[in-house]
Length: 193
Image (cartoon, rainbow, N blue to C red; front, top):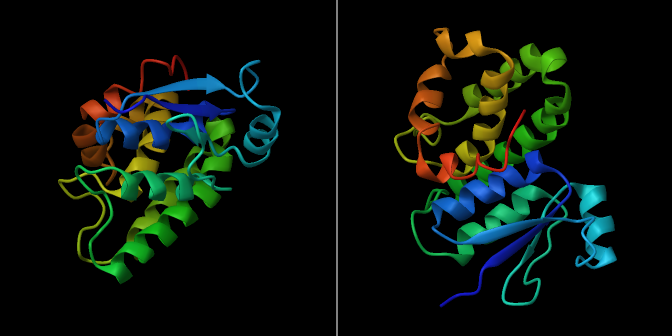
C-alpha cells in the first residue's frame, strides 16, 4: 500500500490545485502548515517565499518546484489515472504555459477578490480565448488548466453569489466541475474564501 502523501503549505489557495489533482488521481494526502514544528525550517522558508506547496512522499521530497505548476506537472506524470494534460507534446506544453499565465496573473489578485473580481474575470476570459479550438478547456474531461481555474471560479462565486446566475461563459463550467468528487473533497478544509 502506498504511503500517504504529505503537503507542507503556507497558503490554502496555492495548495488547492495540488489537492484537486491528488484527489482526481485518487491519492490520499494530508496537509500541514509549514509553521508546524514538525516541518523542517528549510521547507518553511521555501514555501513562504514561493507559496508553492512542498510535496512529500515515502519519507522524502522527490521533487521540489519553485512554482505550483511544476508541482502539479510532476503529480500528473507520477500517478496513473485520468491524465489532465494532452498527449500531444506541443499541446501539452501550450497548456502548461497558459496555466502558468493564469497562475502568475490571477492568483496574486485573489487575496482581495472583491477589489479584483472584474480583473480576474477578464484575465480568465483573455486566456481562455487564446486556447486552441481543440477544446482543451471547458471540455467534458477535467484538464490541467481546469485544476487551476476551479479555485478561482469557486472563490469568485463565493464572493459574488450573483456570478453563478449570469450567462457568463464560465457558469456552465462551474456547474459541471463544482460537483466533481475531486473538487468537492478538497472543500472540507476550506471554510471561507
